[in-house]
Image (tube, rainbow, N blue to C red):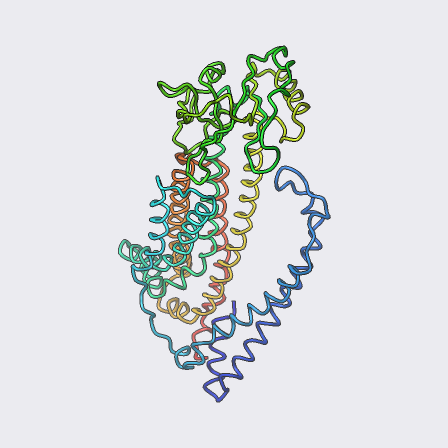
Length: 519
């Protein structure tokens, strides 16, 4: 809050003979002491609130108190890193004072931001768009492609923020019909970087929240029970096709009792595909005869003329592959190899979906093949994934709320500091006849215009990034977010605007007649 006044105070010290080194040392010590006190206070609040935090069901379940502990390396990194970072920031902030004390005491209008600031944002979106239809074959390649693109877009939102603020301020000034809007637009256009700086944290929180919400909502919608075909829940299978464990399953070990379980319709063997190419983007690790495939309704069918098909061991095609997900997918033809000579890597049991049939089949398969991962249906895996994603969504919502609170506090501090810095010009405006209510509208518009303009772009960039990632990686179309997202977003913006309004009472005290004097 006192940064602007402190900078002017240091500049005045330079004018009366203080050396740059003395000023820098004083600024470093001030920032170091203040940040060290704040860090110690933060640790005290953590230990005081830890019992209450443990009772809060962040992911649907409460934590044990021992879960919320600090490691010594992490605690020391914060305890030392925050004060050191604050001290370095204080030294860097004095670069104008070191160059010229008159440059602080008598400021000039900075150059307006240029349109090139949109380039990082557009470059990140272009990278994500380029990979639509060109998904990298390896996991490392996918991580590098998508994570890099989203990070570039995130940086682009911050870089483009001042230009967006300037564009919004010029539009505000052009459409202004009353003095408050005209003054606010002109003041924002005079220094859009300062206007954006106060809401940059909020913009990043909205961007990250939009990406996470878009991806998680779409994945749950595409892979949830509402879109599942009967085979997802009715087919119980046990299979091995990874790199650990036995090379194959013994077909003689398949329990004969499976065929006598009430509700079991058929039992088929899944065999290894000797021509599987794991380096390819779409590879099929298993083979099945077309006759066995036809015995399981909803498992799909072979391509015309084929006697065997290349499949996934659970007979459910993955999203984003060449085999369309649906009630009757068409699997690619198997390579020309003797099917009955290939190793058995799985057993699939088709049931009527009743709990008794599913659980009895699961017990028989796990007893017969104890060395393989437990028997499960695709619905079991999807249920686990859905629960995990819902927990992650809850954590993402909590992170967004915490980020909005921090960004809101930063906004209030920035506005209060700006009022302290500009109290003399505001007092002059009041003496010139501008009413206090109109001056309050000026301050409100100066903060609300960049807040709403940049927030809209951050949200749009977040959902567009999520849509491009989903289309490229999984061939999914973005689903609209649920009501919780809109509630959190609107609440965050309303709270931010309320924080702006909460600073209005300061105007009367800061812009009184006594302020109009030479310091």
